[in-house]
Image 1 (cartoon, rainbow, N blue to C red):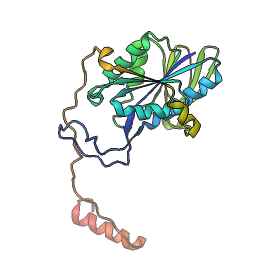
Image 2: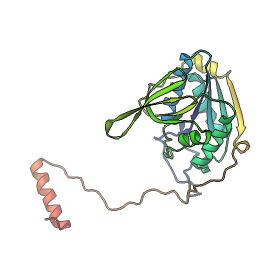
Image 3: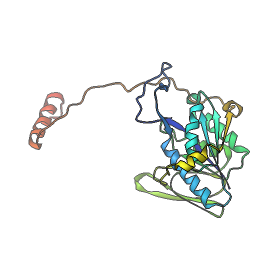
Image 4: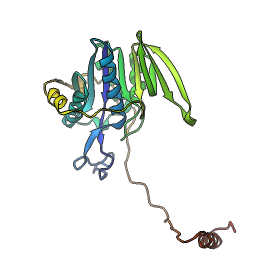
Length: 256
């Protein structure tokens, strides 16, 4: 079995964000970086499947500048066999269609039986790349998976719906699965596996060699939300709070 897992390196959400001078993205120089949280569940599921299927081979792929190698190294330490960096110093300028096109171009000749992605990225949150890759490759997409099983060249997932409902879906391979939080518990790389990861293959391919599509979505501007109005915090026991609320409603609204 030939498996691909696609990951993205994103800013740590605890970082202090500043809008870049371009006005279309954030300043990256002072940010801490990590693997997209949803993608860690995709890595874990891919590694689990690799251990279940004899002879399975697992490739991890990421698009971005040289810094994404750190994310790829962690994926290798978690159990992936090799890493591929589609090198792009301006990856943040690519839209979902372009990112998916580059991944699909790489995967097209590799005959992957299963492709795993995160449900969405934490920085853009479009949730489009996985399903676009599946469409471009002409394979089924099973999205927002919270349970996964593989048997007899087919995958069965339970996917999360609104209102606490779940849908069970089955598809033959090749297929793509996008992974939701709670699908599994991502492992921490052990020191021996971190050392082994240093000897694993790390390929670099210029994204320009694969990407022939123009952007279909352009970011015009990025800005903090405008501050509108202010909040008033009321304190005291319930009786006093009720009186305060009634007084405010009488003074500032026409409700009373």
